[in-house]
Amino acid sequence: MGNLMGSWRYKEPSTVEECDSTWETDSESDEHQPGGEEEDSGISESMSPADAVRGAEQLDHGSPQFGDMMESSTRMKRSFYAAKDMYKYRHSYPNYKEPRRPNEYRNLRFYLNKIPLVPDGIYIEEILTKWRGDYEKLEHNHTYIQWLFPLREQGLNFYAQELTQDEIKEFQNTREAKRRFLLAYTIMLDFFGIKLLDKNGNVARAPNWQDRFQHLNESQHNYLRITRILKSLGELGFESFKLPLVRLLLEEALVEGTLPNMRHSALEYFVFTLRQHAQRRALLRFAQRHYHPPENFIWGPPKKKRISASGSTGTRVGKSEAVERSAGKARSPREGRNNLEREVEDMDERKSGEWKTVKGSKVLQEGRGRVDLEEYIETIPL
Image 1: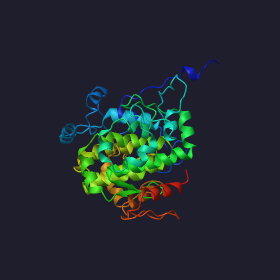
Image 2 (image 1 turned 180 degrees about the vertical axis):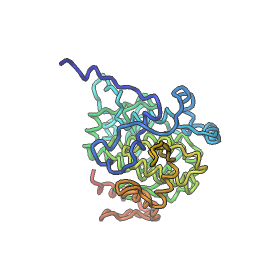
Image 3 (image 1 turned 90 degrees about the horizontal axis):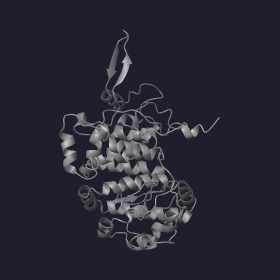
Image 4 (image 1 turned 180 degrees about the horizontal axis):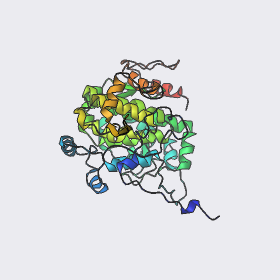
């Protein structure tokens, strides 16, 4: 029969429509089926690949002027660069080739405190014990983030080694590495002005949120870091931690107005790190209700064709569908706002001041030390 698989070649997507399947079906019933996590195609308007390459690195992830220009245009368009980047991540890098050199598990060994990060020569335990709250160091050092949050893609620190499938499996099966990974995550959350609430990944404003949010709103290179952190959470076994963080950032950007410069990065990148269609849809519906000006919201459902009683073809605009849902008028028992969307909206009811007790988990109150944080993380089943 020959090598049939050898003749198959991955075809790079060439449009946003080919990169995103968020609204491919508007039913929530497929989310927990084998194909419910990602098989892509379909959404709104897109930049051409040439335009995207020229503007992608500026759009939200670096240049507020470019974002303002796009915002003021009569017809905004999604970034093909961003859509393609998220497509490859959600599909486990379909064009990825394992490195030819032997797998040294350098990321795992770094997290086991056996080797330092390169080129700084710093061990993970030093970061975990001395870097928390050192915001100047966390802001201006640009070599550690690739080591703390490794991916199957090359970052700016070329000394950092990309993850491989085998290393990911070993990492997920190593309790000590996962414990330290969660501690590193809490350090970065604190740097952003956010605190981890419980073993489910729920988050809320930290006591220092005002100063840190102001810094985060102005220091936009940190949006690249947040994208990396979200991707790494998914790679290393903490996919469920993404939804609460992205939901909080969207709320701060769109509702509270504390992070207005972040809103396009959140919508172009953060939301699309989530692998489940239903989670992305719920977040985008939330965002659509709070986005201004509403006519510039380009991440909602596309126009859908329908057959009228007379047999002619008409269109139904995604905005009217959003109005239906906000009024609670689901089109069928299998569609509309199901438990997942209600769960996303229930995140509004966050309690500040202390770590919530969830199903008997320990409570970590504000003002207590790092030892208690480690004790709390020890209770999380890894």
